[in-house]
Image 1 (spheres, helix red, strand yellow):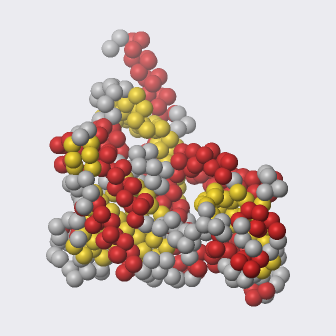
Image 2 (cartoon, helix red, strand yellow):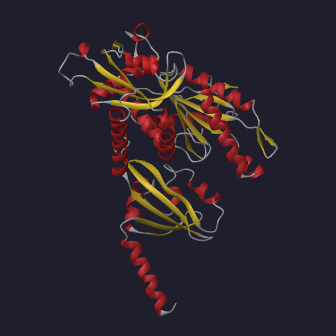
Image 3 (tube, helix red, strand yellow):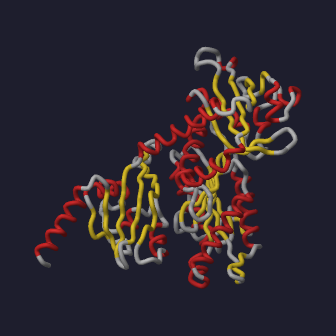
Length: 444
């Protein structure tokens, strides 16, 4: 190497080590060739053995499909992923101890990749606060002529009605007064516990706002913004005398823009389902609600059986078609209030607020049966597949989302060991290698 090239190389190494962002170079199999101190600092909490030898191994817990993404990236160079958000649990005993990392991965040539890693925890917090503030401002400032305003009592029942309610929702005084505000939602979109949860969160934060499909009195639906705010500061009145303001607005005209933002931030790129970030946010909120007021809460982990064999035989485009087909089946099977997400690779999760073990198992069995009876056609080739499902439910021994998912994962592994195309409930005696059939297995 001549002097000029040596100096350029030394300058590059110096840049890598001094750069204010995490930089890492690795082989296509993930073997780390070079890593700067900041990147090593960000990766160390993820390392199971306190060592950093392979990027994919280090990130397996938070980005299990990263190896697959690199293997499937056919161009000799280019961007494999850009700003992929990774959620890192820093302390299993404290679910609030969470760090968010942003990962961009570049393929440099036929043998190397470059990772750019940064801590975006504060940015994520600010984004959440900004979305809530924007929803508040849109509700209060935009289109004030087109809103329904009513008051709610301490149980969330409509206490006072005015003509604006009929203008927006079609409900008359007789059809709305003394009924819970859930009458503006589809039956599978909110539970009685969910009604109380929104009131509690409004007391705690000053308001609670969400956006989604709402129902008019004639059964037609519209894209609405629903804001709940307490009329008194906490402690100013006894709980039995609490009251709230409910404002509903028809914002169908900006649904496309809202959907586009949600897809960009919280959706899986292949299936359109919720991504890991959205899943964990929803699951952590449900765990907080459970710890305040225990109620049924179940979780399913679904794995597409033999997907690798489908990829090997028919190509990865066929495997992607199977994953999209499974995503559509999940969305069609479960309720509007359920959170359906892609965990990574061929694994999916359904979080079921208010669902007991029996009702969650019934839904999972319907999914298994429906998938087994359908055929996916890819370029005229029929493909049949099945799914294995692990089921876990919340109890007092669970203190984090990861523990609940781990239980469902062990049950799913048992379902595969017992022959696949079935649902298995988590039981204390299950381990990751369980293979013996149990009475709780439901073959379909």
